[in-house]
Length: 178
Image (cartoon, rainbow, N blue to C red):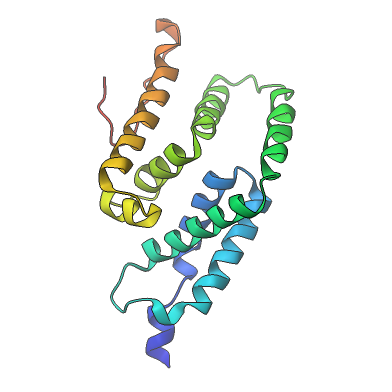
């Protein structure tokens, strides 16, 4: 009984699950709901977890599948996301340049298409290998690499659009530093 409990200890994975859920949903409350749903599904399917397997990748895969299930069952979420975007555009930006810049980079990340955002998040933020991320998303390795490349190119374009005197060096993790 103790061995089963130790090999299925998800407490240490909550940070990764929450970060990935926030990247997918763009909403703190929805992210927490998604994590809870994913953990419930993982607990129900704990017998299918291979001993010695990568628990984080397995949990992230379940979380991703739960997110896809939500999209398929609730197309009305698009209306909610558009409403959140309209509200966020009316906010007054803070005067601190670095805070403004971080908000711009964050918004650029959230503006990426969902497939690119998910791929980049798993590799650049969660630190999964390309193969683990491809397995998590259930896509071929080449497709994952293509999505990451397009996401990084989009984020690099954000830096290229700034005047030379105001450019800070934005490094896209794992990308070429041009």
